[in-house]
Image 1 (cartoon, rainbow, N blue to C red):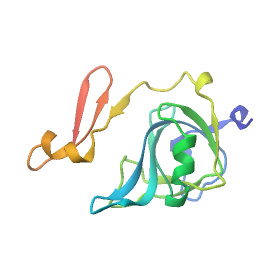
Image 2: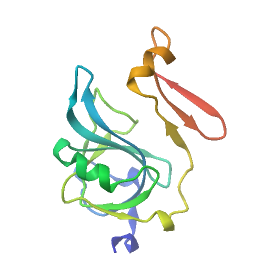
Image 3: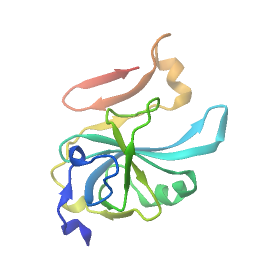
Image 4: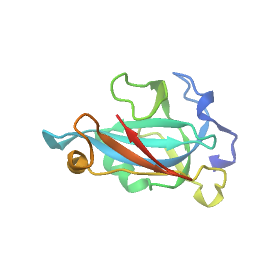
Length: 156
């Protein structure tokens, strides 16, 4: 069990740092597709938060998406090892972090939800892509709603 190992916080990671164990809560996961060709999956994306509240984007190859989708559960906390850190994409960045983690077939997950008590309790309610036009103004797109002590609407 590698959950007994000292874990790293996200602010301690650097590009190319592939060692150690991360303890993260899965906030959201999705298959990245093109609306013009919705059957084709580009990759499988995940959004994670650590105990300090820092976010990171996780990416995996489309061929690995089905395996991850069946293995991971939104809201659960995992200890993660055997990951790859790399620079975040310039154009598509779902959170404000200069690095992202690549989830590869060798990446190992241990569910430690039962023992995790130090995580922020915020969560997101994402709307379906098809309903964005009905819910947003002409020049804005509603991307999500964050629940905490008050409602916060995020506009892009």
